[in-house]
Structure formats: structure tokens, C-alpha cells
Image (cartoon, rainbow, N blue to C red; front, top):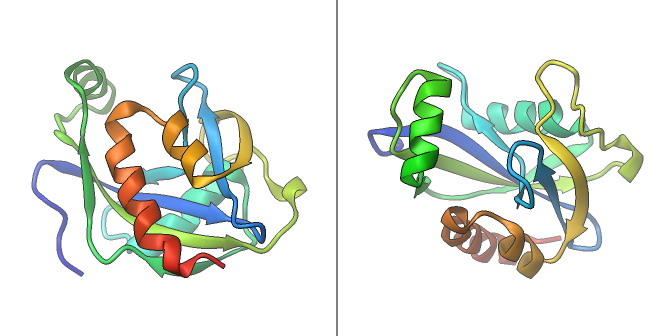
Length: 161
């Protein structure tokens, strides 16, 4: 696998789909009206596939999922200046944005498995969740993430169950 671009924080994104071909999205607690698919950092020396499984469990409590596909390359987005400044203080490093390795996961469990408190190992990120169409997911995410979401969803369309 090629390396992510320099200056970007390594991250995974997870497109979790159910049997109805709907995509899991959740509203962020820290940004009102912003919905997104689960994502999170890749730990030092961690494989992106392992990070995706860990992040979906930490953020949603989901353990019943299998990887169907992986994006063939890193996708990046830049932080808007105000977000970059906020995160520079929060993280203690100045990243241009995030380089994400995306994974398509099939949810094999029941909806009551989903728990926005996650597995309890991290703070809660989300306030509510829903199964959405691809159009809804793109419409409800932050503007600076929309191009990546469109590219990810187009790449995964042939693999959707």
C-alpha cells in the first residue's frame, strides 16, 4: 500500500452498509447539524484494516461487520483554516487535513447492537444515527468532506451488497 501524502493525518473512514443498501451515518456531538460516516486515526504502526475495525467498534459498538472492499488509494481533504487552527491546539500538531483509507463494511448484526457510546474505550462522538441513502449522506456532511464522500461512494457502488 502506498504511503499517505506528507502533512496529512493518517485516518480511516468506514462506510457501513446494511442489507437494504443503506449507509450508517451519525450526527456529531461537537458540530451541530453535521452528519458523517465513522472515521478515526490510525495508531502508530497500526494496519489501516485493523484501525477500521477498531474505530467502528469504538464509535458505534458494532462488532458484527465484515470488510467487503477497500479504497485503492488514500483520499484527502484539507481542513478549513478555522478548523485547522482549532485542531492544532487540540492535537498539538499542525496537519493540513486528513489522508483517509476508506473501507466498505457489511453490517451483519441487528440495529440494537449499535450503541453511540461505543465500546466505552473512548468518548462519545455522536448524538443520533440513521441508515441513509448515498445522497442523504453527502447532503448532510460538512462541505469540506463532500468531495471525498462522493468519491468514496462512487468507488464502493460496484461492491454494495
